[in-house]
Length: 116
Ligand code: HEM
Image 1 (cartoon, protein in one colour):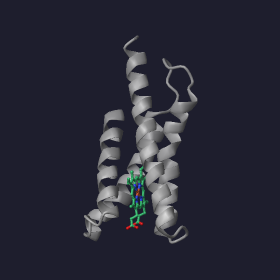
Image 2: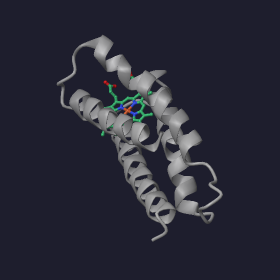
Image 3: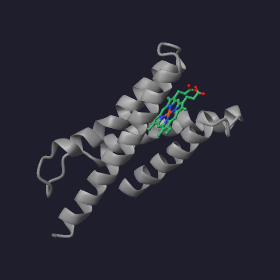
Image 4: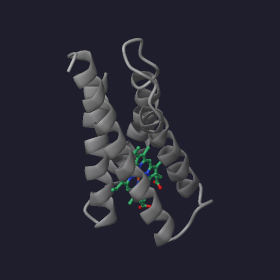
């Protein structure tokens, strides 16, 4: 599940950066960013929950919820509750922080479960 989450996040980065730089004009393709966003937030909640073999870790909890925060921010942009370039840039930053946190949590889980 973690690998699916990571792949989906990288597709999301490509779509987001592509859109920002005007490379994704097709609305159908762009709307994938919203549906993929919902899938990502859901996968993160499932995949990064408490694990019996891992010590509780606030950074893992941050990784679990940051995609949801990014999604809610994005949905508020979509509904025109947050408007302007600055809001989009904050959204992009939240998205990239999500990628970093999920990568960290995935690596940490892998190391811990390998017993290193
Ligand atoms: C957890 C990851 C992410 C989620 C859940 C997410 C979700 C969303 C949602 C729901 C929207 C509103 C859609 C719309 O306005 O049509 C949006 C817009 C946007 N997202 Fe993301 N996003 C994520 C990551 C990223 C990343 C990493 C980037 C770029 C680095 C990015 C760039 C953008 C841009 C540029 C827009 C606005 C596009 C426009 O208004 O034309 N997103 N995102």
